[in-house]
Image (cartoon, rainbow, N blue to C red):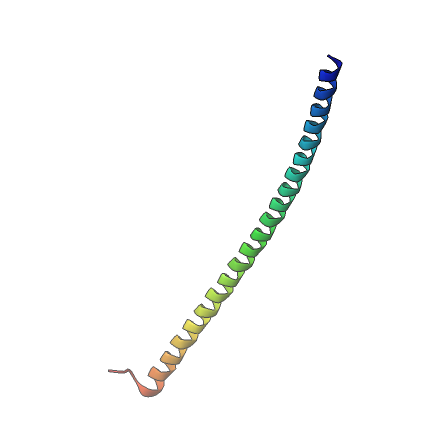
Length: 80
């Protein structure tokens, strides 16, 4: 009986150690996942800002083209 108790105690200790190691790994993975999520959010925000900037530049370029067309019509008359 004593020998079985010792074996069970050793098994219990091993399982507790494994549980602690797994909890530590899970905590590290959770932290890494949180960090990656934050980085992803920052990258998405940067991409959204870049898209907005590019849309603004395109709109400005379209306005400039329309202004040039208007000036051409004023100087040369309507194209037929």
